[in-house]
Amino acid sequence: MLVYFGGAVAVADYAFTGTEEVGHNAVRALGDRSGVILANHGNVCVGRTLAEALHVAVTMEVCARVYVQALAIGGPVTLPESAVEAGLRLRKERGL
Image 1 (cartoon, helix red, strand yellow):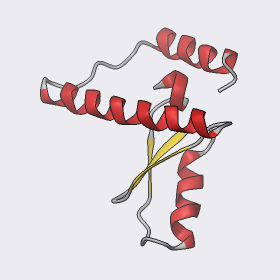
Image 2 (tube, helix red, strand yellow; image 1 turned 90 degrees about the vertical axis):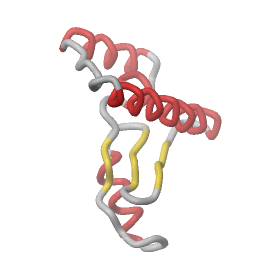
Image 3 (cartoon, one colour; image 1 turned 120 degrees about the horizontal axis):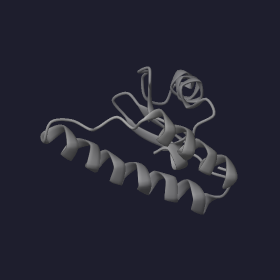
């Protein structure tokens, strides 16, 4: 998640479907990351190209499945700070 999303995936505040507020909430929650979950809607993923955005979206779906499975067996294990720093360096090196 660090490499593809830039960290934990945020959840944007809820807004009614089709309103400008949905977009504003998505952009605010997205920040400098590559993916965000829209409360009660789904996700939005971005990339430099359509292919990259699709890759991020597929990665988000896989990560969501893994996260749910981790919750079922007691919860995910938090990464040590050194691993977080290494993941963010790798993201920067890849230009993501």
